[in-house]
Amino acid sequence: MKFKKVVSAALVAVLAVACMSGCGDNKDGQASAGGSGGDVVKIGGIGPVTGSAAVYGMAVKNGAELAVKEINEAGGINGKQIEFDFQDDENDAEKAVNAYNTLKDWGTHAILGTVTSAPCVAVGEVAQADNIFLLTPSGTAVDCVKYDNAFRVCFSDPMQGLESAKYIGDNNLAAKVAVIYDSSDVYSSGIYEAFVKEAKNQNFEIVAAEAFTKESNSDFSVQLQKAKDAGAELVFLPFYYSEASLVLKQAAGMNYAPKFFGCDGMDGILAVKGFDANLANDLMFLSPFTPTSEDEAIQKFVTDFQESYGDTPNQFAADAYDGIYAIKAAMEKANVTPDMSTSEICDALKTAMTEITIDGVTAKSLTWQSSGEPSKEPMVVKIADGDYAVVE
Image (cartoon, rainbow, N blue to C red; front, side, top):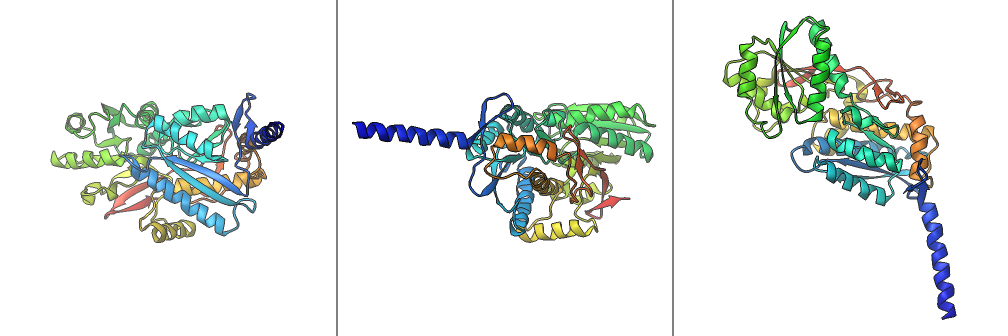
């Protein structure tokens, strides 16, 4: 009995030491997920790889994995190899939090994610409480970077709405503009609100503003008819390309041919199965990336991506690729090591992210503000002859 008690006491001591080495204290003094220790840097990812938004999540997953492969082949981060684990959230906020908890239990040091805005906001709440670093490649809602542990690679919704209105006005694309937007989606409604606000400073009039929801996103005949009746020469579409492909098809069916202008969610419309690419000719949209750029770094990225995945990368893949390199640069700037707690790493990265500059495929000299927002200029892409081209 005495021997068993000694063994039990020793086991408790060992477990206590293990807990201390595996856990850190967050900024509120509560236990947070610790670094995995060992000899690898663990980076998690969250996004939809199944469901209706899987095309975005798979692009992010693949873009991130390509960057991880390159970094590991070049020696890793501070000499340590990266382990990357991407969890499926099916574009669902509750499932995104479950994915986050899985990565937390795994011992992640930082998370690239999430991919879409609503899950990103949900994960942001729990990650802030745990003091775990987040870098979303494509979460555009304002609240995705609500806390000081969260940064983004992409443009915010307000920025896209503002810049779209400015571009349409500065280039005199139309005097009368209609907007069709998804009032049930924070991405779409956020862009819409900023667009309407900036339109008041521009030389065009919004003659129709028509909403739809995720329950009514297959028939746009009413919205298009109102835009046509109002004499709209341009229709602004601040939502994703799956619905946009239906808008273009239905507009053609009613002999309505205005100019169409969208945002980064439009990237990928030419890949919609069964969609006539000719219907997208002259469609313009804001984007941080186009695979047809002649930039040497972009062309290398495109070639390597195509060889690895048999597909052409979109801006979601590009943002994720830059995101992993940003995490690498920030970790190296902060001298992060795997034996640090996740909370310690998060605190170090909050500062380091504002001190790094990377030459990415979505922007040259890409930097970040303490607000979590990136500093980079958007480009305007126009579809012509079934392909994407940058508008100079």
